Image 1 (tube, rainbow, N blue to C red):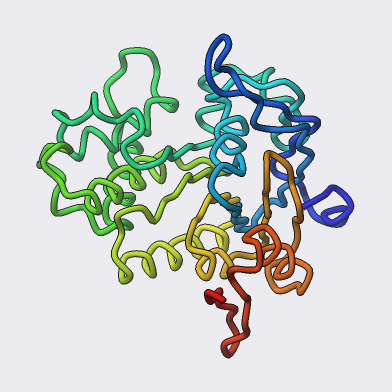
Image 2: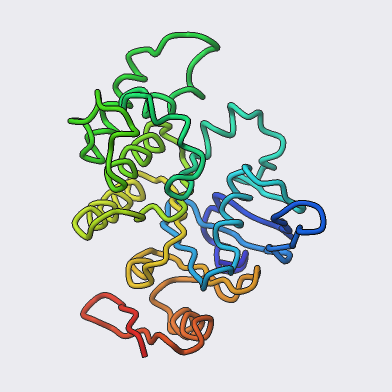
Length: 268
């Protein structure tokens, strides 16, 4: 949403004049085109748009895992001024399924989730009681506790995704960024994820997710619609303007309809 839309709400994460590129050398291309965005604290915001719109690039820039030009502010202060440990405690990041996690395949599930506690631990210090409590809670929240001794590489895609989600939860950060968190999850576990996100928001957490499932994205509090590296619309998911923006970026190939108290996206 833009800054005016959240003037009466605390802003958790903000981008100002954000530019980011992908590729190297002559193959480098600019993806984000001066993005300005303010994300309200204690809300669930979904980022949606067609393939190549820049959704994942935006999330990676906000998470600080991709170089960018411009400013990213966390609770009003520049993210760039935080140490890597401070940022990791305040801003948790879930990458797309399979992105950068192959090195953890030989670790048992419990140890993978314990990696989320590293920002809270002194250098080379063993995990303490608070760390073990956080890991068990996260594994139970994602219904992955029974696999705690299994290697990550021996899990199915959906099981693996739930473990990586548990790792993010174990950080206990105030802001959580999730890139396609529903990948490989079947419908019942997608419903579990939505319930979990609502619980997190009820606790005052801020959740920002990139989702391809438009109907599920419309269950969020706020929606950010992107096209060609720019924000087309940002605001409450219930607003008609958000629905028209979605239909427009998908070239009128979907239509948003009311279904009881929910909104659904149907093909045209």
